[in-house]
Amino acid sequence: MEMERMEFCLSCGMPLNMPDAKGMSESHCKHCTLDDGTVKSREEIQKGIAQWFMQWQHVDEETAMKRAEHYMKSMPEWADK
Ligand SMILES: [Zn+2]
Image (tube, rainbow, N blue to C red; front, side):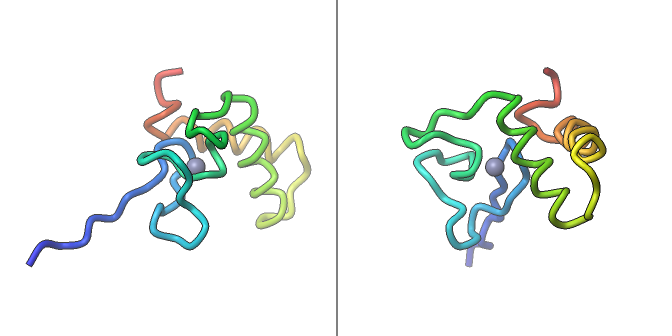
């Protein structure tokens, strides 16, 4: 039997098998893509991830943006950019 493959969004790392994660793209979650499956700009993604840090870690926006930038360096989509 084949193991179920875990797939993660290349941009933010969200597991794509989570409810509501899947959009039009096969490799990115719907939070990181537009309605047609195009990946959003780096700035938009960073702001989105920063919002997530602010909610979960209760940090201010500046700290959250820095953490988001650092976090994105580990993502395949943004590692070299
Ligand atoms: Zn994503």
